[in-house]
Length: 294
Image (cartoon, rainbow, N blue to C red):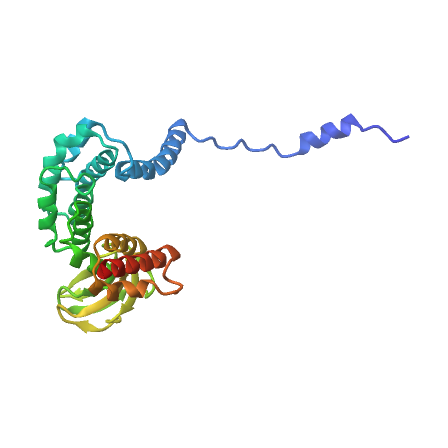
């Protein structure tokens, strides 16, 4: 039979063990600071997303305020996107803001004009929309001209056909002033409109060269270390899939025989051309041939 534990020995061992030091406790103030910091880490990205997400529904009062908010162009864009969505649902209550849409066709911020050109294509009965879009065909921005041309197709107006063809072509990106290339993006990189392609060192300042369209960087003409003059080509950007897709859909309706050369590069079986784009290019060519035959 095994011996029972000796309580006296256990007691002696406990008495001889060094007393454990109490853990220092975080003060209430530090705990509150810790939790507040944690909440801010989570909350700040959410608030940024919430304030810049165009899908957030705006009240009529907010739309009216945002359309006049010249200090925050993204607020104007947000209101315009909401107008476009309500136009597509046939909401007649938004016609009170149609004069604002016409006014914003001349806004100094390119992104606002770009959104506005799309919005005015959502309602072909909008007073002044057709005339404003025709003027936007001369906009300095390629994407604004393109969106205006696409919207005009909804009006049954083919005046923007040259601008739509332009959407199918790669965009040359040039230096705006002389300098030395000190940094570049990588060929093959997907790039958003306004994304940086290169940096130039010019007269003790850094100048960023940005893409006029969304797409993919096809080639770089000026590597790092090369000196360039104003107007020298820096890069070539291929248009994005969505831009090509919309242009092909428009040309399906208004394209002419001389446009086939610009369409044909997209009807080839190549890895970088999605199936839906290739099929649309083929359908657009066929529609043009049928119109020409008539």
